[in-house]
Structures are given as structure tokens and as C-alpha cells.
Image (cartoon, rainbow over the protein chains, first blue to last red):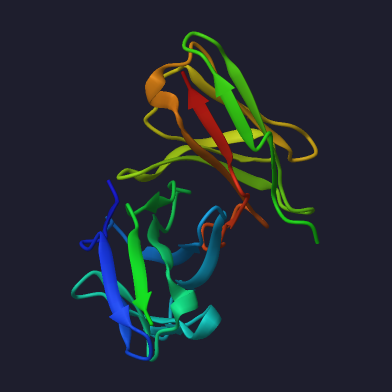
Length: 114
Length: 114
């Protein structure tokens, strides 16, 4: 069975500071990893994904994430937070092969303080 | 291209009733997935359809059912509604059935069961 853990319900960061939203996963085989963002009263929007290759993945709005196979982590990062980054962030995993379902974490609320 | 559309956006029902939610994917997208979103539970996978075939099913009771039509539009049905079915139901589409594909989400249908 596959699973995703987002250990922090909420992350607070000052505007201009770097931000990290943590995600760890568990799958039997190779993972496909995704980050999505949900703004208030909006659907989820895709940010970035890791399929294979370079462990550092760059995505929309200046976000990036680093795939770490040994630590089974896929933390989301941004060098300088904006107030407009305040939203709910979801990590998701899909085991490659066999068309397994996508499993989402419970989400982390990011609050950027002006 | 128009995004994923879901109708209706809001529904209020009473216990014991049934409800049908509709999802129109992005033009050309053949894969449609449904999720239930509740506070504290994140996104729970309901089903995934590809070319009118159910490819995956989550751990929900048989009261939850779905289908996909030849034009890729999808519906989900919940019979004998319970209070715990109150949630935001999200539909997501992707271009093909590829596991590495990111999903595009609709705004959701907010279901309230009284």
C-alpha cells in the first residue's frame, strides 16, 4: 500500500523568508510525486512533479522540490515567500506500474506573515 | 481551453436522499478521477475512469458509484445519503491514462447533508 505523510498541519513563515513544506511517502516501487496548491474556495492547482531524472524539480510560481530516495521525502521549497503563497498545499504519490491510484496527504496550511 | 467544470457547485440534501454530481473534463482529456475532500482527512480517492472503464476504486461503500460517458464526461452518484457524506467533491482530469500525468481539478461540488 502507498501512503503520504505531511507532518505539519500548518507552517508559518515571514514574507521574504525561505519556506519548506514537508512530505514523506511510502510505496512499494518507484514513485511519481506531485505537489498541488489549493487557494481559498478554489480547486487544486498543479505545482510540480517528479517522474525520474534530476532530483531537484522546478515548478510554477518559483516553487521547487527535492526528491530524496533514501529519506523517501519530497519537500516543497521556495527561496522567498510571498503573502500570496498563503494556501493549502497537498503532496501526492502514485506508484509506477499497474495504474495504481493517486494518494494525497492531508494537506499543510501555509501562512505567510507580512 | 476551458477548465474542468463541475455541476452543481452547491447542493443541500437530507439524509436518505440520493444525489448525482456531474463533471466535464478538459477537452481531449480521457481520464477522470473523483475525490472527497473533508477537513482533517485531505483528499480521499473515490474512483478513476479511463475511456469509460473504471480503472481504480477507493475504499468507499457501495452507495458511492460513478460512470464515464463516451465523451469523457463523468457522473458520480451517492445513494441513501448520510450526514458524514457532507464534503467537497472534486473531479480531476488528465490528458491520457499515463500514471505520470498531472491532474487538472475542477472547483468542486459542495454537498451538505442535513
